[in-house]
Image (cartoon, rainbow, N blue to C red):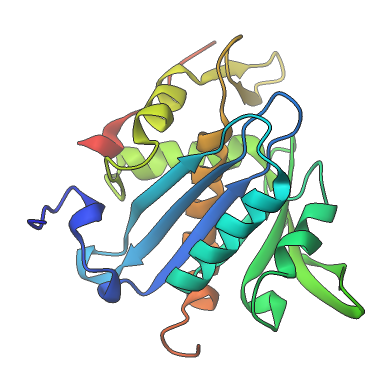
Length: 232
């Protein structure tokens, strides 16, 4: 495949300093979604999204965990998983990853708060008969999505046209930002639409910017639309 500076699918994976998987876990009528992104120092620390997947509705969570763990191992990637509504999934996923779990897995509780928490807290989990803990961040949904928008506008986030990229582009272009009377903003998908891939993307961007050094396995094992500049 010919190298293109705007297509991360053509970039050499060995040149990336770290990979992060953002994983949104679907519940009931929502899809589970996975986004794999990396940090490329040669491109000025640009985040490049190289793969994305939206699972079919009703996909067993065991299959979601299998795929996320496989991609994590294959790419030596830190996984940032949404644990807002299903904390048991974190242990399910942890059992499929190498030890120590905290080197591979970070949990996220996504809230309507204005800002992210300053620091994570330990989240105890059980892996069979073993007791472990992973970092758990309390993250603001609006700050997560605004960070994606900012990265795109600065052209610091590039998204490959691979996997479920058309679904991701559709979600980004239809996501709505609503400004409350208090001046705070909230984001949601309009009726009949989804934001699962957007949230997986946002978690991977958070992981690349906040956890990138920890994810580096090569050194130690009114309403508006979101910009689509990541495709240009």
